[in-house]
Each structure stands twice: as structure tokens, then as C-alpha cells.
Length: 147
Image (cartoon, rainbow, N blue to C red):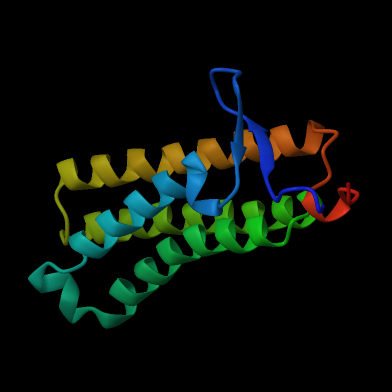
């Protein structure tokens, strides 16, 4: 029997949890929620007309959840860390673009703060997850022996 595909990781409360799918990861859920918020906020009338900026922030937000998912599916911590790092970079890109959107008055201060805090939370979660995986003795399910 092949070892069941699962990733064990530490949650902030120091409990251990098992993720069998990337959809089980708290960081992926938070990133998905942030991406949905970005999509909704970019539907406002004035920002809809700025195709470049609207599309860029949407692509960056989608990049976060996509890289988390792709890294998880690689089944190796080294690759997962690499993809989580890319996701973290994309989260930084989203935060930078939020400043431009706010400065151009496409969103108000309250919307900016809400989105910025959500994306910052995702970045912190990614950092914590990366640090955990770097220190973990687990190398990923593709390195597990068959039993």
C-alpha cells in the first residue's frame, strides 16, 4: 500500500494538522478570500476602465493562490517552499498595486485598509509556513517509502 498523500504542518496554535488537498490549507483559503475581494473591488466603474491596472492586480492575486496550489501538488517541500516564495512575492505585488489604486481614488481608505490587511495576513502566513517547512524533517510525500 502506498503511503497516503498528506502534508503535515504546524498551525499557529502549535497543533499539528494534516492537509490532504491544497484546499485544506488555511493560507490557501485566506489567499482565495483575498483574491475574491480583489475581484469584487475591481468591478467598480472607474477601475473597470483601467484595464491594465485592473488585470494586473487580478493576475497577481490569482498568482498567490495558484502558486500555493501548484507547490502543494509537487509533493516535495523544496519545491513547495519555492512556490510559496513566489506566492509571497505576488502578495507583495498586490499590496503595491493597492497603493496605486488608492492614490488614484479607485478605492477609499476603508477599502484599502481592509484589502491591505488581508493581503498582509496572507504574506505573514506564507512566511510562517515557509519557515516551518524549512525546519521540518519531512521532505514531502514523494519521498515517502511505500508500505
